[in-house]
Length: 67
Image (spheres, rainbow, N blue to C red):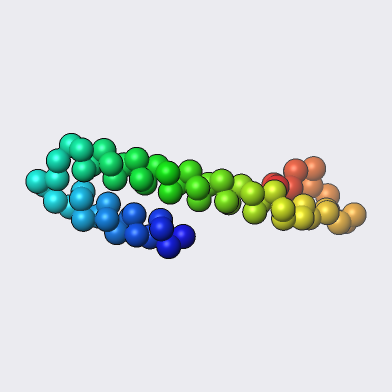
């Protein structure tokens, strides 16, 4: 999370500077993509470890419980 926060801070500086080069913008986009991929992988992994709630017998809905 700390690395992602650092990359977001750097991205704000690069994207806020109208004189940033194409290379700088591309580099920061790649780093942001890496951080987002890591965060999504971690969130998915943690989500898979959460127990799925069991519906009670007096629950009349046939809707599936999201995992």
